[in-house]
Length: 408
Image 1 (cartoon, rainbow, N blue to C red):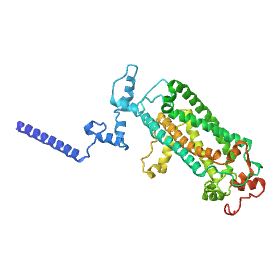
Image 2: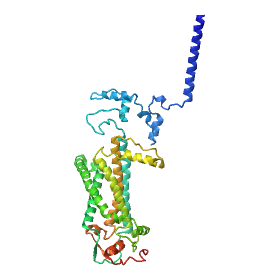
Image 3: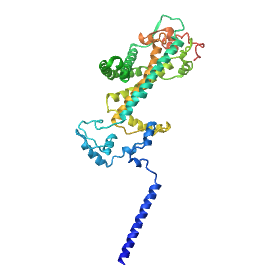
């Protein structure tokens, strides 16, 4: 009887085990298959193909695969001059900044041992940034050359009077040339730092390029203070004169008269085109100055994590059909984004200033005198800034009639 009872219990236990195994198999079949089960948690062929197609790949499976965090933190003690144990979990923790790294040199970036986003920064800097930035500047130069060949120099339509009127005071011209001169130096040295390896080293060699690039970097870093001072001065002097008014609409409606002869729309001290330049310089100047300060003081002025957080809160990425922007950035990533933004703004800035330089020199007769001597011929003032001429002289602008533009 005892033997029968034991055999019955063993049969029941075996039957229960079979039922449990069958349930587990059914549950596994019902559950969605882990796409990385066959790779032991590593990336799959589809991950690799998606990355090659330029699609965003969620690497959370890799970033979080660090095992026990305490164990990963303890294993950093293995690192030293003789190397350490090659543990995948440890290296993933180091790569994604979750390891407890302790270094003798204190600083916000000293504890970052591995930072692979630098390759993305380098690829963008040497690829799209240099390529499209260069095309932008060449395109603007080509457009200006074409405009000059078609339109020619914008001449004064009337007879010069020989009498001059003060256009800009000495302090205004000082502020303008401080801003303009420093910007030209910043542009030249910045382009040298970006394109020098590809454009200059083949021409002058590495031995000559090295001191040139070092000097350019010193000039770029220090002349930035003159640029920011000039930006503050021109803002203080000219902000009130660049507030848009109804006359700007009339100026824009006829393209400022720069495409036709004997067309002189009304304008005060600054016309609509100059106001666009002013506000572009102000906005881009502030942006490039802030990012420049972040580069001058590394790791002290993080800009992008907080900016991305605010953009996510406003739903900007969703409007553009993008995923949320990252709000947790390593110190190196902040610097890389600051450098890229600094360069992008610089290219747009230079494109605008090229057009401004053209119109202020060879593009328009008498325009350079305004910033050269500060004095302009009365006829030039009547044609290009008739309302301003009337304000400062109390005399009517003779071309300020119904044939040149609508009555006020």
